[in-house]
Image (cartoon, rainbow, N blue to C red; front, side, top):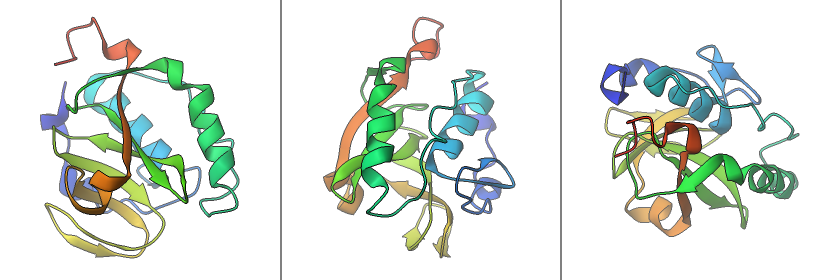
Length: 155
């Protein structure tokens, strides 16, 4: 198990789908849940499907949902498998998943991302650096699922 088993170019073809949870389409939470389960065998409860949108109006509800379940995670240094919490619309409501100490995979419903593997326009799955540019300025927290701590997967 581990990040090295993931087919990143294939993942970048997964479309954005609100409340999606698999390779047919996912949102940022579904992407992180799937990657955590697939790369590390850790299943987390799906607490992220209780939102109604990915816009400014719905961002506070998403942020509240994330904060209500933050105890499932421990703060950590950036590392493979860590969940990255970003500010979007002024609140902590976007999730990325760390491939390593500088690169993430995440799903977003708009924009163009210049990733390590390709440039993609429109909503989809992206691979980007989170230690520089806009993502660095928006990064609020780095957390590892508690279920990964102590089992030999945390670095």
